[in-house]
Image 1 (spheres, rainbow, N blue to C red):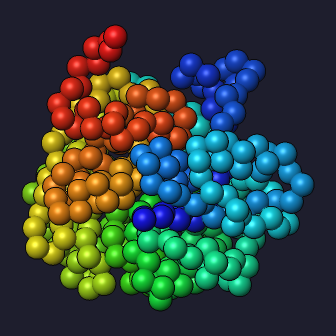
Image 2: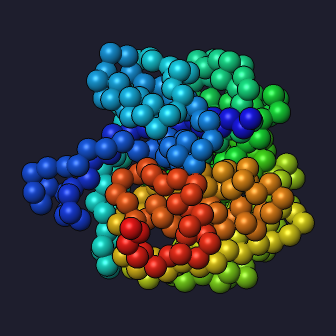
Length: 345
């Protein structure tokens, strides 16, 4: 049976209520979030046995609350390491219409940022595992995290575990003296399934094509087949490269689709017009979780697996918080064409 393992950092997420600006009213809505935990929640909700691995501080009620919530989704948390440090925080001002979303990180000296190689028992972690997911966020936190991520993907590869990586470029995090391409290039050479948005390949790995402007709000889809092929040529270990395609009309209205190339064929998904976005944070993670599940549900139909991933992510935009809270059956309803939003009685 398939078993997914994800590895990264979970933070306390603090966001003003009702699309307010920070401290417009004296309160924040407190939840948890983080790329790799978001993927774990997605795969667990979609029916795949899932384990989540991170480092949390000892004797800390925020860490205890986060673990309890993850366990509530059915996620195995038995390999989480407790060590010195703190729980990271991120503040989110959710955008609306022409006001963009803004993120402020407060995650220096978190337990995972202070961790390094040798602190996790990868042999035990990968026992019976079939899939391992990481992102480019964790290696951006510190040199120790970069070394730890490389240790993890190498250990997974040595044990025959399929490795996926969402490159996830975060310019606000790369502050410890290394550039993203310097670190991520080595990590991605141990990856089987690459996942990116329209800018990650360029800014995280230095792979680009001409006439692609990631800031324009519209996308020339034809260029992304070329970009996927360039990624596959640059990293011969990659079995496939998926790219999400977000057309940002405004913070509240996005066109949402994706493409994937597996060295044999190129697939482009249908496009969803998401016109009343509730929360786009975690949308890419929902795609990653959906792709992992889709590849298990449709092992012989890459196009259908891609459509499943895009539909799962589309649904994520309709709920607040980082986590995607939809089941496989609910994703399949949208995938099969029922996107009207009519009341189900």
